[in-house]
Length: 410
Image (cartoon, rainbow, N blue to C red; front, side, top):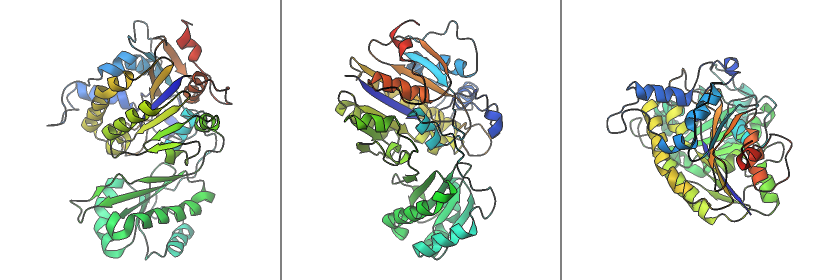
């Protein structure tokens, strides 16, 4: 039986979304703008990286062709010597992490999430008071749209002095709560987020995220790897449920288990950064057996560089990932399939600090699979449909598999 490995480079969009104007993102292009910035010298940073963007292994899988497909450009002359490539548009109504991942796993989100307005305060008074009352808090700080690192730097010292957690949101459907791991307590933060999760269900908020940090001053504050997402469970079975439902294992690496509210997940691995995540992914690939799925999220691209609008950092992270990609490719056995994709964009050259509405690349390889273009796909769900067919599952209700293209020259 086959195995499947699905790697999500969180926020690695390739632009071209035909509905980007609806989100104020017309022209956003995470990959294209990083590449252009590096070519112009704006991706240089002393001791980090310099020069043009260098991604030879993803290029060999067809990244340039995926980018051209996303923009509706001619791909004649584009060849992928070691893999297949394509691009996909998002059918879901948002540009957030759950929508992107659920759609990749075969479940587009057709409803509108709830969002908090970009006002101060951002949260309804009844929500704030209920959270304070049920959790026994002296109050909250923030109550606004903010960048996570900026608001911790600004309010962290007051949080330590008062015991009030820092609550904030963004253009995503999310309530984020930051608190100090020692002064407030990590378990207490998780308990607070569980209360908040219950309170925001009726508001259709997709995620409550615990954002623990350490340090004693604004100069030393740093977020820790103990983030936890409290997500709404998917409203229909996903690829994960279908795989595990047949008795196979689903290895969730990174924040995948949290994104799917642990539904369909059999094995969980966490890691503090992209390179440690790659180690965990390789370990899961080594352990996976016939019929198993390894689903990995590489979050640093988004959280550390996209939201912080850090072009050199994002470029360096892409290059570090690309250098390690041959390790995963070398582990592929007969019957295996590896697919790389993104869940949305987060163009570090764009205005603001939020996600950007973009198409995502589809890059993949596997012994015996053709090195061809799979075209511009009408939904991220085509990825899940292809993986499902590859694993021998019955077709699901969403997405169209492109596996036939990989098994012939069609």
